[in-house]
Structure formats: structure tokens, C-alpha cells
Length: 424
Image (cartoon, rainbow, N blue to C red; front, side, top):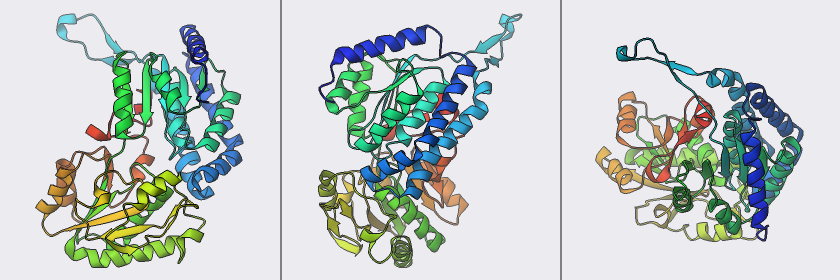
């Protein structure tokens, strides 16, 4: 794939631009029909997609369905329900000095869209922005991650069967292909991945003044005070953290726990893990695998200090047990970067000032989770901490609401998508 001849990409892009210029993608009927075909194709290819995601990441069918396939169905259904209304010109007020005239906002397609997707959700991450691109009347090129090759291959076949290449196509390959694509002019670039690569994408886009959406990472905290229902908090944190073995950009990256609540929460977390994955997590069908041995090595170096539970590593099996580490400080290896794995460090605090000092010392997170019974506390934290999105007394579930944008702030990204925000 790395040896792909770049003139072929140029030829593909030229054909897509000509197809877009023909106006073929513009009508409501075309857009709605394309989305309906996409849903039908996903339904047809479900078995292959489930198998591929298990092959790439060890995902169970249940997890792969609710976090990837079912998510795409929800996005398509929401878009089809509202698309006709989104397409209508939106009338605006007109000042008295322009009496006799009327003012409207028309939403027109941008043109040719590049979608660069990651390996951790290899179906959801390319398809969700594609839904917005199709709904908005664009043509699109998807570059899936080479680190989830089985799913990428199925996505390529699925889309090739569903769309003509002038409308939607997949270009596979590694970093050289990504660099070659970024060197060309696009009308919009949608990237999901690390902050470091996000900077590269933004710099390349700036060469052509191409607008971007950057969905990046960040150390997303869960802050827990003593008033919280600790049993509920433990189960929801455990689900949020160890879904996809922690390889989720909005997973709780670390806990900030009120000191007097930690002993009880620690036992509840241990109980939740045992309930979810049994006495031997490596044998659990519900726990996936780390994407590569290189990532196993990176994560294994972080497992040090006071281990509450877990710590086991099987490099050949790409397995790391769900691990909790207590008595952590900002100097601990887990706090120097986004973990993106099944390791959960725990920092404790006695006064809110101590907790806020930790939050201020780290970049703005993509997600922020607050567990408390005090609505005033929750509201104060929401108003104080800059973050992309989040929940009070839960984790991850804000992604399931298509009415609110999903995105970051600062180093965790720019722009938002889902629902009308993808269309915009």
C-alpha cells in the first residue's frame, strides 16, 4: 500500500472534483438515498465487520456492536430524520435600514473531504464523519489506520460496493500515504488521532487554508468526592475505563478522589472488575487486546508503584490486565502522557484547591467526569475546568447524544461533530 502511485490519487481526486462539480451530490433525494444505502451495506456486512474488529482488537461482538456498528446506525437514523430540515435556507432577521429585503443563511457543501481515521474504533471513526460529509452533499476520501488492517479492508470493500469512487472511496496505506494525501488541497479535513499528529495535520491544512476538525486526545479526569454513590461510580468508571481495554480517547485517564472516599471506592472498583471480567481477565471474552506489541511495551513501562489490582502483562498475547495504581503523583509515568490503555492511576486530595491544582497542571482534557451528589459542586467544576464534553455521575455516554457536539478544546482538539454538527 505504501507504494501506491501518487498519480492515481491525483486522478481519483480529479474525478471526484468533476463529479462534485456536476451537482450530482446536491439533491436531498441523492443524499438521503446514499445514507440509506450505507445503512443497508453496514447491515449486510455486519458479520465480517464483527469478525474483523475481533481480529484487530479482540473486541467482543457485544462491545463492537454497541460502540461501533450500532453507533453508526444511530447516527444515520438521526441524520435521515432531520436532514430535510437542515437543508432548508434559514431565514434571519433584517435591520430596518434594509427594509424591504429578506435575509437567509444557505448551507452549501464544501466539496472534497479527507477523513483520516484511527485504529481504536476502526468502523465508527471513519463512518461517523462520512455520514456528515454525505449529508452535506460532499465527496469524500477515507484513509483508515493501517494498525487495524482487517477492519480497514472490510470498510474498503463495503464502501466500494455501495458508492461509486467519484463519490466515496478508501485509500489505504501507512504514513507515506497520509503525508501524500495531506500534501494535496482539500476543501475540508477531518482527523481523529493523537495531539502530535493533529499538529502535523493542522500545519499541512494551513498550507492551503483548508478548514479542519481535529478530534485529539488528552488526559481525561474523573473527579470523585465523598458525597458520590461510590458503588455506582465504581461500576461506571470501570465500564468507561476498560471498554476497548482503555483504548478510547474519552476513557477516564486518571482518578482524582477525595482522600476519605478512596478506601471505599478502591474496594468497589475491585468488585466491579471481578464482576465484569472474572477472576482471570485474560480468559474473559469481554476484554479486548492491545493493538500491537509496541503499544504493550509502552504501557508496560507505566506499571510501577503501588498496584492495587492487575499489573500482569503478556506481550505475545497483546494482553495487559486491568490495572489500578494508587498513591500516584504528577511525577508518575502514567501522568506524563495520555495512557490509552487499561491502566488507571489514582491521585487523592483533601481540599478542592489540591484537585484543581492537578487539573490546571495538565492540558485541557477531551472529556471530564464528575461524581458527586452535590449539584452545586458539579456546576462549579463544569464552569471552572475547560474541557470538550463530559458527564456528571457517568462516563462516555455523552457520545450517544447526537444533539450535542463531540469535540475537544485546546490540545484536545478543535471543532465538533455528530448530528447537525457533522452536517455543519
